[in-house]
Image 1 (spheres, one colour):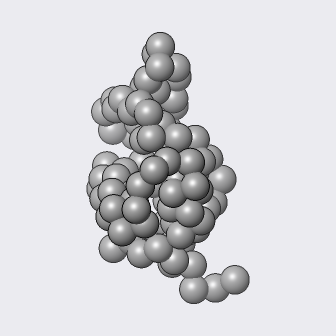
Image 2 (spheres, one colour):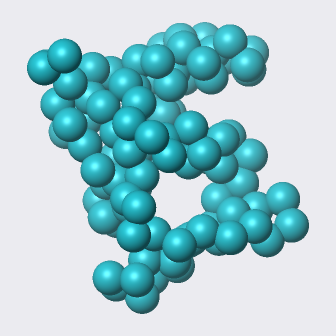
Length: 96
């Protein structure tokens, strides 16, 4: 289970390409494809390199008019979905 202290990074094995304003991603391992847009795409771009979820949430709050509780809940939910689909790598964040 992810927490705000988890450090996440998108799986580098996922191929992504622009499709108008959306981003289409393909998992070579499973053959599955996914599409994201708007904030989800911004999150995907932000986790190209390892990033602590709390930092990601802080950046989203600064860029959008959203309260911190809602942002945390929605961001964790989206990242959990990426994790469930095998699109995300996670570190627990307890070691500096």
